[in-house]
Figure 1 (cartoon, each protein chain N blue to C red):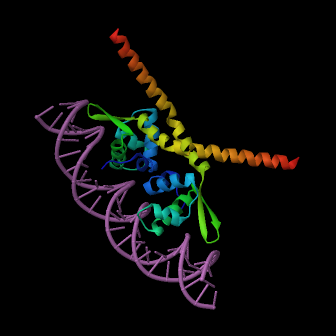
Figure 2: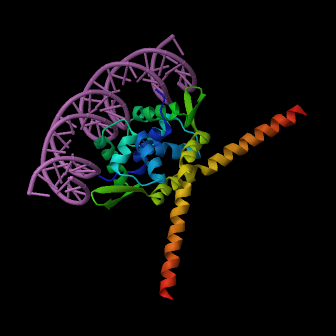
Length: 106
Length: 106
DNA sequence: TATATTTGCAACCTTAAGGTTGCGCAGTTA
DNA sequence: TAACTGCGCAACCTTAAGGTTGCAAATATA
């Protein structure tokens, strides 16, 4: 079944993989060395990340280098966009509050 | 135990709750009416969202209005920051590719 | 060719996530 | 006060997530 990116990034190991991959493409073995778990466990995470297209495989002989797919990560950014105006509103309210306090001190 | 925000938004129902709440504070009952599940199920989701401070309760008599906490949502933005330069790089590479194609056509 | 390495796939176990029902408590209203 | 309404908490069930071990396929190397 098709995984969604929100479920994919909910796991801390998968987020760590993404952080590594974003800097440099790595093989499953190379990734597994970074974590305290078996290679197969890491491979499961890779599978999830690949299914939702957050990473892309590049075959090189018997090795597979997994690349970070920044474009897909932007979907997350797009989702966040609907809340951006809420940040601004709440910040403006904070500004108002601070102004009020400032006025009262006068 | 303390929930983390990534786990919190991995559930589609919780994302829907956040979207609703971002527009207007709601009571658990009001939320439950929007979804095809029991009020108690929704309450469980509320608990998760509240534990990681993505929403905040406001008691009003026997009703509880849950508000959206935009400030906490910014943590996602902070996490995404580490990938922003990847987007730019990949876009630049796309630009390079397009330029190359353009050159070849000449 | 024989052997070692890299990987994916399948079976299995344990635990937690998401749902349900049932209850009790506090606030509202008759 | 009595009845009703809105919530949270606890117990329970089912399923899926994350981990393990074992094995087979494909490539690299002696």
